[in-house]
Amino acid sequence: MAENGASFKLSTVEKIVKHHFQDNGKTRMNTDSVKLTTELLRLFVLEMAARSCDQARSEGAETVEVEHLEKILPQLLLDF
Amino acid sequence: MAENGPFGAEDYEQVAYTQRLKAAVHHTVGQMCDNISEESGVTFSRQVIAAMSEATMKKCGEFAVDLELFARHGKRTVVNADDVKLVARRNKALERHISLMADSLVSEKEKKKSKKAKKVTAPSNTSDAENDDSNMG
Image (tube, rainbow over all chains, first blue to last red; front, side):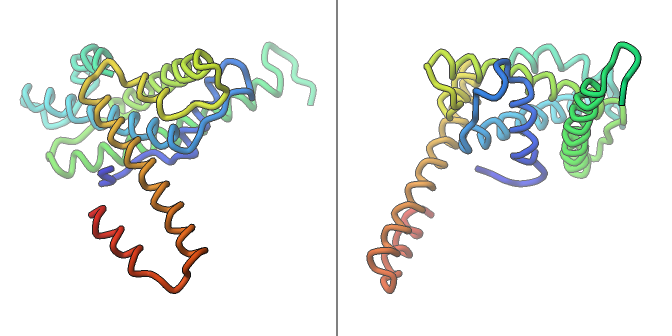
């Protein structure tokens, strides 16, 4: 899809996901699912950054602080 | 070699491994934030970037647990694209985006396969492959 800007490395995402698998070693991932999970995480981060940026702007701040992230996080987690 | 205390050598290795993964995520989140602040002119504080990478790690863990359970429910040991679609099912726009991307990945793979087959059968005939490209674009 649209590959503009930075994104996670496929191998990193695969390692993190495998690290969280419960029955160790048995479950594997095919290449498509790794790519799609990476895209999912990329969108999650972009959305989080964009929303906290908007929040900071609406409060007239120059820098995004944790309080801005705290305000947008609940809705973001409901959306993903 | 012999570790006295609550943590053994293996635990330390585990912690070091997760720390490395966290550092990788932190790096990428920082890059993405830099891109956004270049566009918008709003800068991100260090704490925000750290909090965002922590949230991303947690979310990735949730995805992983879901993916494994979905695959197991489908009596498979390999996670495939349908499992990821299920993870994204609650957000309609996200589901559509992921489905489209999955379809394009599949069609890309089939194109490669057919190109390979063509190369095997007729290595000199490249005009067909070029026609395929123009159709896709």
